[in-house]
Length: 297
Image (tube, rainbow, N blue to C red; front, side, top):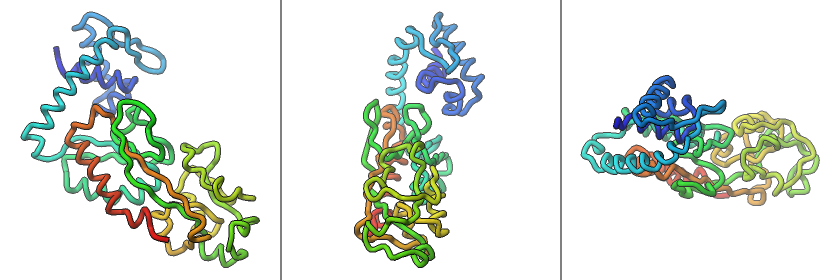
């Protein structure tokens, strides 16, 4: 039995669509379909039911999947122990992260890591939404909430601090803010409530319910730029705002928030050399950036 056909079967079983499986396997979706057809012909039964939303495993497919996963695990163990694994990292690692953290903290460091490993391809999905590990959108996901269930490896990556910021121009043009009560009447910049992708982003509910918003955006980078332009007050990550000379801290020492980044990946990938290397590099990056993520007041 052709292992490649089984590998294609496993990827389609996990992703659910030909397009997603093809992207993960770096082939055309017609190649995935051809491989699955060849495997079904060899076994003599249908492994998938074709539906409008994708491909669903048949009973025969569900029986086959754990057997193929066991074969995959054995193969990965052999590959990780082989001398060739020491020759250099290669392949694709896709990392999902929040927009601000991915852009401002991870991107420069991952670029350097990629230069050290020219055969390794890094995809960084720095997005203002949740990147789903269960949908195979990424190999490693950095999220604001700890994954609650599933066959995944999870680790706390780091805490980080957020503070209340406004531009120097905004503060000069408005009444002095010395207490939370002084926030009354000020204009704020924040997220779009009904499009929040995590409850961990509901900072203002802990501090003050604004009277008015100048701008709301799903993008933390857009919020940062609007705040720096003098449009209002916003809660921003310190790793984003502290490096901007246009911004000033509002209510220093009082309006502080702490959140946590969690890192996760499918348990089946933990033995892959490239996953282990990137996982460890992300941990080292968070530690090296500790002063930026958790600056002193």
